[in-house]
Length: 139
Image (cartoon, rainbow, N blue to C red; front, side, top):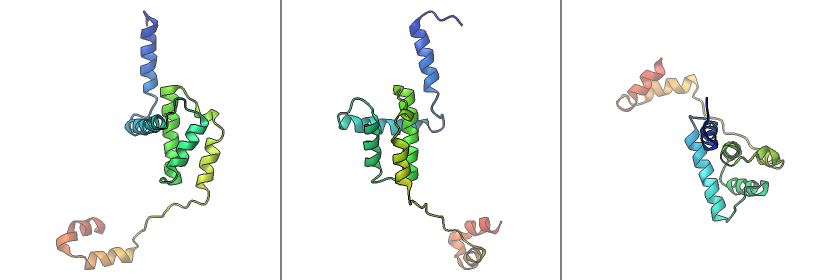
């Protein structure tokens, strides 16, 4: 391959880097990054530092559960690396902070129907409304 200019090399490299985010969930990553940048703008923050990320995550922790907070951090870590060349692994307080938020957290278990519940539903539920569900449960 013959590269005629440094601009061309930069464009190709930029395109390659933009593909580092997961293709399937790229819109979610972009949305998370945009929300973070809007928050920074609202707080008049120009440079992303460890304290900035800690403050953002602390604010988000009032409405998000620990697993969601971890997901938010993972998306920000990836997008900040790709878009701004910021390596959040160099911020030693972030992971311990997230771990401390997870202490004592218990995820909710889904309620599971047992055979008796399914049997009762099949026998007692109105066919006019639940016939298709009953057929699906019978298999």
